[in-house]
Amino acid sequence: MTVEPSVRVEDKLFYNRYLVDVGRPHIKVRSHTEPSPQLLALLKACPARCYELNDKGQVEITVDGCIECGTCRVIGEPTGDIEWSYPRGGYGVLFKFG
Amino acid sequence: MIEERFDAIVVGAGMAGNAAALAMAKRGMKVLQLERGEYSGSKNVQGAILYADMLEKLIPDFREDAPLERHLVEQRFWMMDDRSHVGLHYCSDEFNEQRPNRYTIIRAQFDKWFSSKVREAGATVLCETTVTELAQDANGKVVGVRTDRGDGEVHADVVVLAEGVNGLLGTRAGLRERPKPDKVALAVKEMHFLPRETIEERFNLEGDEGVVIEAVGTISRGMTGMGFIYANKECISLGIGCLVADFQRTGETPYGLLDRFKRHPSVGRLIKGSEVKEYSAHLIPEGGYKAIPQLYGEGWVVVGDAAQLNNAIHREGSNLAMTSGRIAAEAISQVRSRRAPMSAENLALYKRMLDDSFVIKDLKKYKDMPTLMHTNSQNFFLTYPQLVSRAMQNFVRVDGTPKTEKEKVTLKSFVNARSWIGLFGDAFRLARAWR
Image 1 (cartoon, helix red, strand yellow):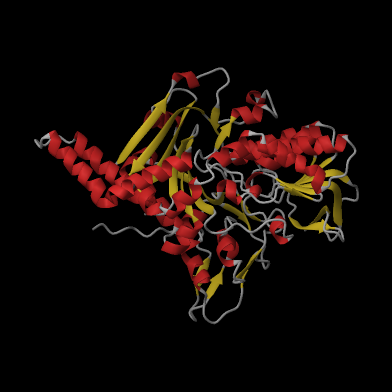
Image 2: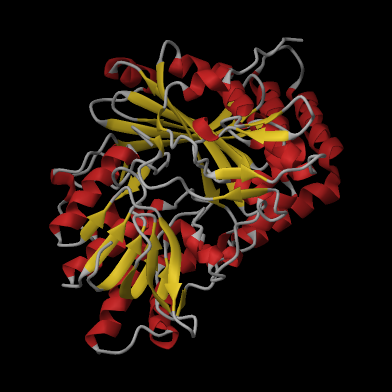
């Protein structure tokens, strides 16, 4: 049995260029006490690992590394768990290659 | 914001939006194109393969100055288990032709070039502008857009929604539904840089020849998904995608899958020593014909990925995007030349023209494939690749076992895994969905 090295997503995001819109996150998590199954799914499905559990067991988002794929919108918007918009023009991830 | 009125507003500057804006501007229309990225391409992600035929219809001499990577001479399909792959390769010198059929491209560079052609044709291209809302009149007719540049509205006779697979405007305005988790795949991709000679040696290429590898099997861990490896000039695009519903169900992580794919012995040797320069992700429409939304209405049409126009079986999307953008432009231009209003009744012409094109004909042909693939993902993406791989190993390994015995073992492995009824059922369902 080989042990899989854990993948460090932060290292991957480090390759990318971003223009962060400080103080204006384009995705918001609805406040909750117990996270829904959809919110919990985002902990793993988000390719940039923007979603994390805080010490109270609630799901939080930090959008700085978001690569704007929309996966969390598809999973979390129908239930009202998250609010999703695109960043303001010019902000967000700036792909060099795409 | 801009006070003037336009003949058409195009939302988005990807393949579909650029095609639509270019084709309308070339017909003398006054076009405004709005793009949220700092330039066309800076938000766009694709493998990527460019299909020459569809671009020639817009820019016949594109080969003179478009930023192309390699022309494809080879296609490899891999069926993978954890340590092997069974391959079907097609390589032909006939693809070394005067006007090659397919190229690898890098979207950020290609789209920038495409956008320069849109400007040259006379369209106004406004980047770093996010469209926040469609402007509708009291009857719901789309009359323009609102952007984050100011609180005013910009008006046009028609709005072309080329806002991509995750477009918000159309769904917010109730023109179409939000993509569902079982109708879109999430793909993650890395750009691996290596010296050009190294890439040519490892992929057995000469000059600007290129190759595409597409892979299914245990790499997707039983989910509906596919890996890809595209050779560019000095880098390799490598990625993997699976249905969002499958990620949700299994708790697999996209980067975990990508990492396993990269460490597969058949893949690792291709990218060994490379420098990664970007990590990206994008959704891909996978619902096929049955997921196509309403394509037109009062004062609007929808094109490209936003309209779910993607052929998942042939992995064609950018050509469907480009073609739907061009056809929408032609339909709009015809309505305009009759001085008729951009009503739903008149814009229905776009759908009729699209129905007559390869875009809808191809999607219709495979209309049952998405359901088959998505509901039998364990069989098609895990069980069969493993069985085929073991069968091949059994076939080629020489160990003194009589061949009749070997065949019996292989046959038995298939029947044990799927049963006779299962095997015939799978073959029948596949044939029926394919025809």
